[in-house]
Length: 616
Image (tube, rainbow, N blue to C red; front, side, top):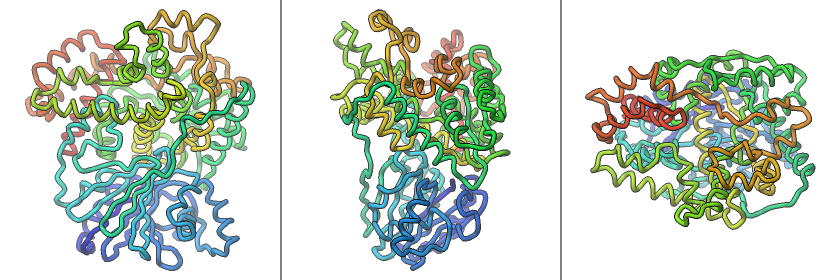
């Protein structure tokens, strides 16, 4: 992948050449192989290149078409560019390079903005059409590649990272309080950021800028009400075939390709599909912690040995998290929301010593109901006799919350509670809208629709920043749009099923935290698809989700750092948090920490503190 940025101005841009080069240098980790700038009368486009396709200088960006009418800065990979190239050659197009970038230019020239429907891949780009003096910005369907935008004093700015907007002179870096509250609650500000004035182009959206006007539209969407009945064997065969195709397409590259391997079901299925089409032993990478109850290393070793893969192991410690937080935050420009970002960062650095591209298993849990506790919230609501708790959306909102708004109201300064209220209402509106689109079919479909559209992009953004910090390109086969469409067509029982007769009745007596994956089976179709080839121990194990002992670390090796960073008199968090209430909460929680609760919340506060000191 690469790094892109640009400025669309009403006046000249050449006097800003110093800023352009500073921004280009600041995103060079995303593309260490080459840099390029194009400056016109009212725009500039910049590009930091990681060479994957046609690695010669012919593939330099920004790239003009052969007529000098179109210019593009493009981050991503178009997996079907060979097929599109052959089609265009058949129509008389002559190509000067072997790049997918040139294919984009020629396809747009023929089809206009409708060309997005033909693309199979991941991308974020800005294309300047000089014939109409229009700029077309677009992002891939799943949101694998990021695109930030905002209004700088010099004009409309955009890029692969928030710094592409806020580095323009005169841009005021202020905290977006409502977005910060939303970020604490969901580890994601959705289509916003914690910087006032810096936004995110949502996945599957295109924005056109022309004549001083911005028009944004969605060009692709899942139909959550569409279904097709399939038997067990037919469903497994169809899913396995579609997934194998996605892995094969995404594993194709002119550079070495490896896989992230946790030893869980998703990454093992990916290794199975990869091995079936590879003639060489796969290079696989795993990260783990040497803490009992959290270490998945034995499963990663089992999976690697089963497929003859070369396993590269990275051990992650509590000290690594404190040592690396500033470095990754400076690259990402945002707080480290996900608890495993440092672990992925460490693993990516190790992987980059051997490969340039890595496949990862993000997306499986969202499309196949892998988060059992969340997927069963409609069932919990159905079993509840409390009418207030019987609303499945309300139950989902309670479960899908990492730093509850109720706790935020206890800890925030009283004069700022309106920001918390705004965040809660905005979140409920966004989540509720997606829920309503799918709820007529089933509650489980509604959960998947929310997670695929809102939760998955935040995971992909985390993976993008943690891998691109080392110049490693990430690809996620489970996010293939055809596979996603197939998954949504499947009946609920192909995703989440009761484990044995009577399990449903027993589950009605217990909260989902106690019965999830004991009384039910998650990702059923994936288990069926790979039941004959994947190791049985992996097929039968419960989901761990890259576990980390955050609560134990907070009460142990992080304790001093928490005291220093969160309680210092000049700590920036005290401008939004009430010192007395927060101090009391920290004392109570550190006395009896819980990994899933307090550990993730205190990590979020540490991350927010470090980001604030570095970026505001």
